[in-house]
Image (cartoon, rainbow, N blue to C red; front, side, top):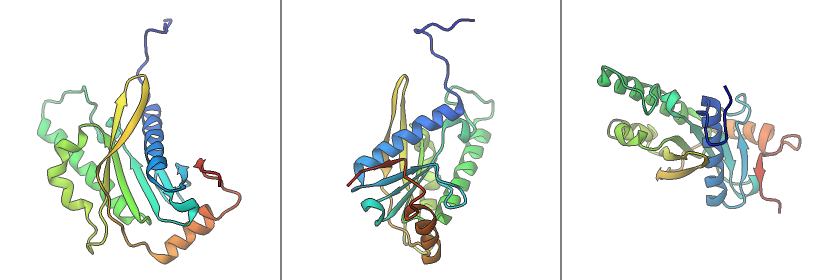
Length: 190
């Protein structure tokens, strides 16, 4: 079978997520002052899809977990006989992601999900965005897929600053941010 230019193949899960990661990185690049942005930094350091460090590496850490429809366990076009079961599965999966984010050593934490996903999840999960000690709230970023055009990212819920364990922060600074051998994927040269 030959594919012509007018036909488009559906994106793989990896391509879909990669486009969303790029959209999030571009949004953070616009929002932060002189950011250093790492796309998929080593999971041994921090298990985020995007890590942005504000103020040329001297500022707050912004960690983002990016999820696509396939990771939610439901394609936007799929139909299930038991929608309540599907919805419960999606909510449980999202709860797991939020618990993972709460534990992540970053000052600001975000969950990036496809457009419209948050609208059917928000009532049940909004309380889970908050840290148990009340200091910190996970932000929600909506990924807008635009066909052949690049995806965009928009903040739906602003994050609030979390406390970060000093030992974990020092490890990230030594092994990633201040390590001359590791370069950010996106940075402003000053």
